[in-house]
Image (cartoon, rainbow, N blue to C red; front, side, top):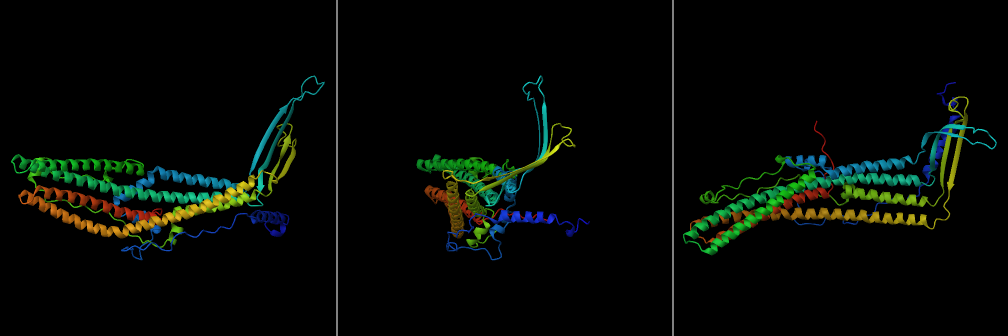
Length: 504
């Protein structure tokens, strides 16, 4: 006979057909409600904003734009790479994925029988009545068998597996969300650090200018050309600049501390914006050098342009919304498991082995075959409403998941709309502030020149100093808000979880 020919193996056909029929029967019944994605509770388009600048049609969507391409500055790219490697929150998110994956594998394994080998030995001395000495009885057994295996006629085990799968997929989306938030936090903190560094330099330059003016006022006061009021006003402005400098030093140190936490390790000194000396250190040197060269506020590094797209795109691309939908799918599957608890639960336990009174004969001719087959049926009749309460809890859990899914969409819509509104108006605000800062700088230089020549009063110079300082501070903060809006828009549109392909 040829064992490879189907005609020569007729006895195996019923076994295969029976296995196929059993598998079909076990998978045919499912009590999970049909899943329908809830309608998005937001408008079909973003709020109209006057002056909105939209990126070109050839620009990639945020979710398709790797963070390496979005971040244009090399220093910031290196910081983000360090954070992705060392941030502890991201490590926790990665391990949470592994934990959820293991739980899914456990639930998946419940659909199949567990087979193992068991061995036992026992010795006893019954000492029957009338016996002069106790007799010793021995028993040895070894068996290959399976633990209790539930026949999933009503889909309870399959539903629990679907719940675990949805939890695993939601955890994977949560890791992507954590990466997006980390990249945005590193970028925002680095921008804040650069801005606070520039504001500290501005405070240093303003302090140097005011100390220079105070030295000139004190010289004029000593010669009777200025009043005590002018001297006290100059001292007050110097003290105000010293307080602003101390405040900016504190804020800059806190920015570095936060960046260190995000990166997960001390930040290399070369990646921290450097401080530059404001000018001559001594009062006599500053007095000899007129403060006619007032430095302008430098621009912050920019990012790649991204289009806003449509709100419907968030449903498929933003990880936190996808995670909320997976939680909803899991809650829906949990209803099927709760419904299955109302129906009979059938389990099988079986074993096949040998039993012998001595160890040598266990595997030889002295032993005897032994087998067991123990099906069991559990039909709930009265449980004081436990199964009904479980079903109601599962149904309430689904309604909670629906509300959380809808809230995730609404929150995402609001974040994108806010970022678009900021981007639409900050450009005009920045243009106006730059023009104002240039005018205030020219006014201060002219006022100082007129004051040195005795044409303008000291009040004119003080007013010009205050206006220039306030305008430059506002300009630096507006530049920070503009760049932060770009980062928030990229984050709100689901960008940051895709890595750029390695070169070569």
